[in-house]
Image (cartoon, rainbow, N blue to C red; front, top):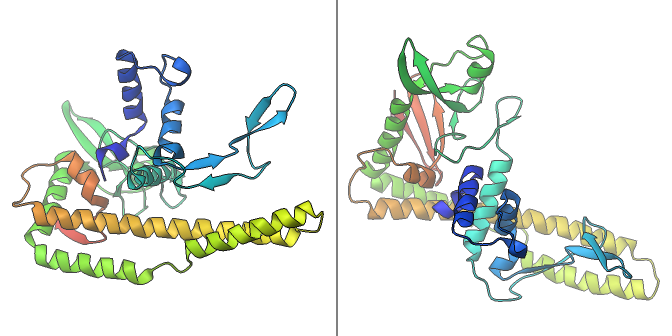
Amino acid sequence: MSQNVKLGIKYRYQIGRGLEADGILAGAAKARWRLEKQKKILRNEKYIGDTLLQKTYTVDFLTKKRVQNNGIVPQYYVENSHKHIIPRDLYMQVQEEMVRRANLHSGAKRKKRVYSSKYALPSIVYCPKCGEIYRRIAWNNRGKHSTVWRCCTRVEHGPEACDVPTIQEFDLQEAVVKAINLALGSRDDMMATLQKNIETVLLQGDETSVEGINAKLKELQKELLRLANAKKEYGSVAEEIERLRDLKQKALTESAEREGLKRHIAEMREFLETRPAEISEYDELLVRRLIEKVTVYDERFEMEFKSGATVDVER
């Protein structure tokens, strides 16, 4: 996934300060670039050529007062209503990443965790015993300073709650490098795994056609307007519209997940095909691009790539 997709709160703050320093104005000619404004830009469908009608609606026609539409009146989404300035696939990657960060939970109780954008490994390194993520910690052991990774359960509740050992950052990063090199060293086997994964994704297919649902929705909306104008009962038609909207959302979500996996497989395949030799050092951007999850066992690291392939690295 590109660096553009990996913007976190800290990065957005830095971007805002940079825009202000350059004298670039935000909306309504304001000098301050607030985080909420940047988030709205990331979520704005207009940049990909789409339009969402009736985001707001008029509550007082005398004063022209408008308020946010929170479901009081219908909203209509129109695709390709104007020329886009951002590729649709990049926009969808951003939405996917924002949802992932907003729903970052770990542990048996699915505790909400804060996403860190500065480093690649936070939120993807997991403890196999309690299911919690590992936290990056600046450690001072008898005057010796180092950076270590430790299970959040142990950090918050002590070794009695979870006794998994602490990991030196260098060891963790070295294991990631070894995993990537193992993938490079077994290109043929890895390529075969990727091909199998992509075939599985393609076989899943679309259980429900979004185009078919849209066609039904269009007809039902016409029928709803006809019944409403004739002052006839339209409750059953409205219920069917809501059911189809839910079905469409589910189909879109499943399709987005499949497209995301296909994209990750393609990225892994491109990496294997274009990388001539093993990597010699840890690379944050490469880890963001390739690694999905790291599970820390007593005798090994299990590295799961975003393409679905896994490799084990001995500790």
